[in-house]
Image (cartoon, rainbow over all chains, first blue to last red; front, side, top):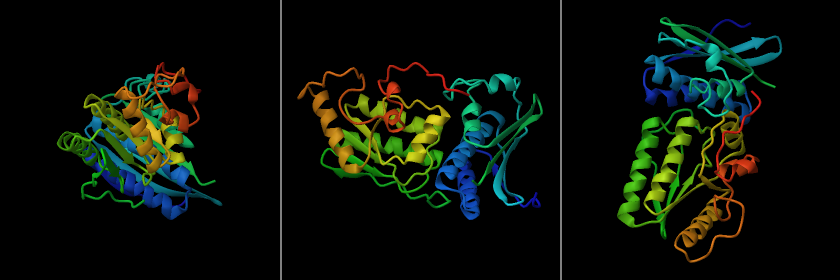
Length: 135
Length: 167
């Protein structure tokens, strides 16, 4: 994989969620992603960044291009030091609407990306990573 | 679509008895809520009965903005008006449905002209000037709803029920 040259944005309140969208959009446009993929991933970014604001007092969004041989992609990490998610299984249970699971909209966001990884420790924080590859 | 949201307020134009809202950039949370509030005050000031929100420039509508639009529609309805979203892009419609957002009761039209037409038809129905067509459709006359555009006609009746979707 290419060296880590991600761009970071601190999302501390609702207002900054829009900036996180802008950052992801810019990076994906630069990498030549399709409009459909940009919409999907920027939307997922918005949902996940807003979760950090709503439930963890904010967090960090890091956007990093990926290169794997001929493949190009984007990796986005959402890291917070919030209360954590007590039951990831519950959070990922698919209820179709954003009211599914714990209301975090995680299953929905996961549907929009190629890879979705979540790590959470109650009392310590949460890290979510999403990946999308160019077709 | 530019990367950065702008601070200039979204213009609200009046065309007959309808307010037109051309959204020209990605909206921050605050801008979306401010727009919602401004629209309701403009409705009151002008006596307008329709609101047409043009989202053809938007490449992203997330759950927050979706909720703002959905709430706006209900608020406008309480003020005896009708709200129509126009110009939703296919990738936005697809993503909203993939996300699992219901956005019940939100009317949609493909373009501004059809949006204005839909406003007039709905107002005529609401005012009892025409009877609603006999259709098994609780959403009322004409005009596709958000779900229709995304090809899920079965959800368009607003009778709800979360449909389950393969996870």
